[in-house]
Length: 220
Image (cartoon, rainbow, N blue to C red):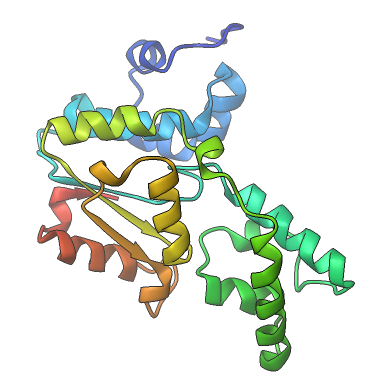
């Protein structure tokens, strides 16, 4: 049933009673059909999985959040900043397809931007480092509006919280500080600390080990 007005997330979940796998694979369709912000639905759904009917009776002890696209809506900002940088120096990047950068570590990202020329890649990375200083993202303005709500509920129920992000560690730490999330977070790991990039599970396995839990006790 299509609705014309913006639907409250709680009302939507209660009304539709959708299974997790349906929501997981149909988020964009749901956003289009119901005028619901997908990022908010995703983050609120985590709470319902742990404490609601979707939990399957298995008590979860931790949640591992990604940063970009989950806690903050930043990936498009980063993409546009990279493209603007290459435009400013008059060099064409390896690709201008947004989808090719999602979830990559900084190392992998630059291999996509500047393929087949390691020396040129390192030279441009240094220039981009300076460019970023004058074009920084304000994390407080792109924080998912449900993040603190969900984290508060999780901590109230003694659920551990970790962040596993492909972003640079210093940027993750800056986000946590600017968004005042310090009190919620038990562990942080960056793609810089891993050999493999997502979707390889290395970063999640390391986070789970650091939390001293089993995979079945964690939602990631």
